[in-house]
Amino acid sequence: MTRRAQITAFLERAGWAGAGRAMLAGDASNRRYERLTGVNGHNAVLMDAPPELGEDVRPFTRMAALLRGFGLSPPEIFAEDHDRGFLLLEDLGDDLFARYLERDPSREEEFYATAIDALVHLQAQPCEDLNLPRYNLAFYLREIRIFAEWYLPEAINPAAEAELEEIVSEAVAPLIDAPQVLVLRDYHAENLVWLGDREGIARAGQLDFQDAVIGHRAYDLVSLLEDARRDTSLALQDAMIRRYLDLAGVKEEPLRSAMAVLGAQRNLKILGIFARLLKRDGRPTHLRHMPRVWGHVQRDLSHPALAPLADWMARFAPALTIPKVPE
Image (cartoon, rainbow, N blue to C red):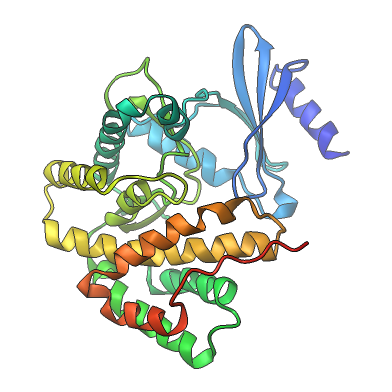
C-alpha cells in the first residue's frame, strides 16, 4: 500500500474521510503536516511521520499526555497509528508567537512573560521517574560533534576536536551535577502558539516537544531567549531572565553562567545542524538564520566561564562561515 493510500485509510478510520487537506510548514525533521478541514465545522492536523525514515510518533503522544496532565496546552490527540506513523491532532491555529508578533509587536512582552510563566510551572513538576534520556556528558559531546563535523570539517584536525571536547566537558560538568528538570529542547517562538481564548499559562500552546529530556533548567530558557529564527532584544532577554529569577527562586549568577555555557553549546550545535541540512539533505532554507545564531555565540563566549572556548573559537572559527549552496 502506498503512503497516500495509508493516509486515506487512517483518515477513514478516524472519521475524517473526505476532509479538505492543505500542507502546513514543516520542520527540520522528516515529518510532514497537513491541516484538515470540513468535518463538523472543525479543523485538525495530520502528522505524517514515516517510520522507515527514522520517525517515531510514540514520544510525541507520551509527552503530549504528560504536558496536558501538568496543565499546559499541547495539542490533543484525536487518533493515532504508531506502526505507520500517523497522528490526528488538535489544530491549535496559526498564531505562532513568531507570526503573531510580526503583526503586533506591541504584545511581545506579554507573550514572552506567558512563556516564562509556563516554563517555570513546567520545571516545578517532578521529573525523576519519567524514564527520559538525560543530558549527560555523552549527550553534550554528541551534540558538539555536530558542529565540529558539519560546520568545521575542513578547519580542524582530530587534536583540535579532542581539545574542543575537553573544553566542553569541563564547562558542562557543573551543570550535570546541578538539580535537573524536564527540558523540551525546542522551546521558542516558532513552537509556541498563542491561545487567546484560554487563561494563564494555558495561553501558550506547545509544539515540537517529542525530543524532551531531563537536563539543566537554563536550557529551555536559552532556547526561548536566544532564538535561532527570531530576533530578541537584549532588553527583552534581561526582563524575562529577571521574571524567571523571581518566579523560580534561583540565584542570578549561576543561572546566567549556565545560560552562557548552554547557549554556546546549543548555538554551536545549531550551526552544525544548519550546515548538515544543506550538505547532507540539500536543504538551504535555514542558512539565512546563521548570522543571528553566530551573534548568539559571540555574546555567550563573552562570559568569563567560557574563556577557554572563546580562545578555541578564535583559533579555529574566528568568523562566521556560511556554506555555499551547490549550483
